[in-house]
Length: 427
Image 1 (cartoon, rainbow, N blue to C red):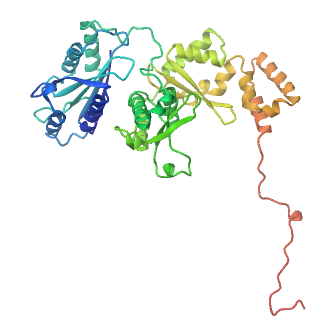
Image 2 (spheres, helix red, strand yellow; image 1 turned 60 degrees about the vertical axis):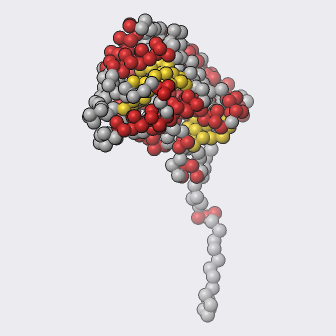
Image 3 (cartoon, rainbow, N blue to C red; image 1 turned 30 degrees about the vertical axis):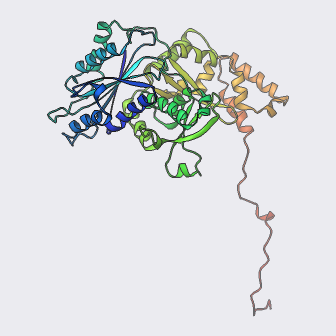
């Protein structure tokens, strides 16, 4: 079992998110605690007002909503509503929320069984519940106890594998209209934005692209970019945009550019030494063999790390991004150190000639007989364990377009005729 705890400013927004899931048939309210009646006899207004009224007892609490998801292994079969409520009650008791009002929803919109719990962190006496390190301490102890008491598949000790927790969006859903598309994108955003530790928009898109989603600011001349706006798009496996974009402000959790910038800074502070596990896994691969770039990517994928190649418009490789699905860290190669940059990794990989060609030449230049000589030089450098990178940079510089400045020799300048002033003669 894996528990995810989120706090926010609006309990109403979280409540309507779950109730909307119920109305769409993707969720079911299966229970409540510390309410005056059974959930089956509670209207929507009574459900939310119980939380709002108690939350108002302490106006100093700005982030009073608590949204918890308990996620179970896909192989767990015997998880009926009664058993899930027992698990929810045990979990809330173990983390100190036994006296708090809360609602429990069973969701059916992912490949794995899971429930959502809505509560607040203001007690009936108006005091605030301290949630500092609750995920690392009380929640972790609760997880271990529940796995043992309910005989669940353990979150720790299983063979590590890439677990995306939900399937990428099927681009064909856009044929169902905007509502279906928005629902699919919202599911991806709900998982990715609060799970992975990205520090820039390109890093976030590296993760979102795994689910066929992209965050787009538009071109620098667009109205969206100038206004600080952001839209989300569904893309296919080649990155081609499909359907109409959806404004960030249209989603319930408001994943706007301002929100993301806050997450960027939060993740930078959280990870002063990023990518320790990534570094160890990359070094481990190179210690045992000399892989090609594709083989390196496959080896890392088997250890829960996705290697994303950043390509320029001409197809040349200019950077690498590592996505660790175990630690949830997202790091650029240059951020981890020179050893993990694209140039250094290519130097250590075998069969880099194709990458070298794609980076240094266009198809037009490959037809030139001089290219054969350059390839021979490349092979000699590799055979002597010398880096071909300087050669690649030299060749690239030869084919760069030159843009002459505005300087023009005086001798070539056309002399201007002096205009005669009226009323004056040359004598």
